[in-house]
Length: 211
Image (cartoon, rainbow, N blue to C red; front, side):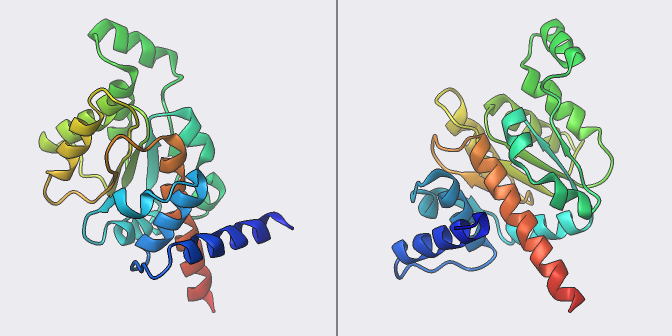
């Protein structure tokens, strides 16, 4: 089987195994891609969406939004070709030497500094957090301080320390479009899957609009 045939078959299996459960689109596409990436059907239940958040993310992508993530693994997994066709770029500042230096001087995590760097980018920004709770907390702080107004925040840090607290903080915020992986689950692969689900939907809609 060719790669696209394998993916199509996988999506068919996922839809079949979900049985009678139905979800609205485009949220369902995000759910299926997270399950496809992880083989974990819990994502049918634990993904939390603010009203119209996926639609807002897709429209932001179509307007050329940038994606800022907290790990190079998520950065590597995001389809930058599709993102680029709309004028957007993916960014991860974790490997920058000056980020590490500033983090050491200020006594904070590199992820915190990376989010501040992302906040200084021009244009619309989608923040995609798949590892560091401190990154998600800093985003929430920047929003509360009125310094940023993200097009979308994907909150999916994975682990045990401050993970639940960071997600709950995002969920409690009003007028902030979010997609959150509930509980301790998440990760760079899940963040990339969510981004790609929106990217592929944007690409599909663009092709449909040309017909």
